[in-house]
Amino acid sequence: RHGLESDRFQIPRPRGTVDPLPRVLAGAGLPSAMFIGHVPFLMRPLATRIARHLGFHDARCRGRSAIEVLASARGALSDQRDGVIIMHWGDADRAGHDHGWMSDRYGEAANVLDAALGLLMKLLDLSDPGTVLVALADHGGGGRQRRHHDSDHPADRTIPIIFAGGGVRPTTLRDGVTLLDVPATILALLGVRQPESYAGTSLVGVAPRHSPRARAVVAASPAPDASLLPAA
Image (tube, rainbow, N blue to C red; front, side, top):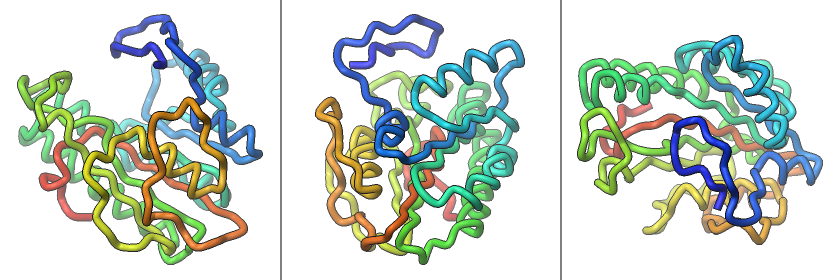
């Protein structure tokens, strides 16, 4: 629907209404902050403009590792008590493309992600019903080609999606859950109506108890099947 069909630079042609999550939240008066890794100096103005267009009120492109990206987000994690805070940790993706998924270098990158997730969990009060941590990957890798992830192989398509927080009831997500369900779930957690353009549905059983203020903290990183991830 959004028209993005490649990771190469292109001018997408949307095939329908597109409602980015940050823009939807902004319409409800809720902030969105984004923290990603290093972007070349000449590309930063464009990256900032794209982030603003999507609805982010704060967008920073600092650091090369998950630990450094997390460090750049510490102010928002401390001060922003509602809306959404999104971090992208690209360590495993870079290692997978450069050295292959499940290579020794990939394993080292996975350990960095594990350490970053552990630090993030210490920074958050996960007993707070108004905070929900979402840890997920946007793809796997190494299915049909050791250094790529663009096939229909289960290793390329299977990802972990984990919710944690004071209001989250321990359960197993139903079969058929996809990334499309995550924005819909975040909107439900924050009490914002889901646009008709959304194809996903909110996941039953992860909504927090009522809180006057709520936030979702999203840590996203390309990773393999959840069973191959180190424990945080």
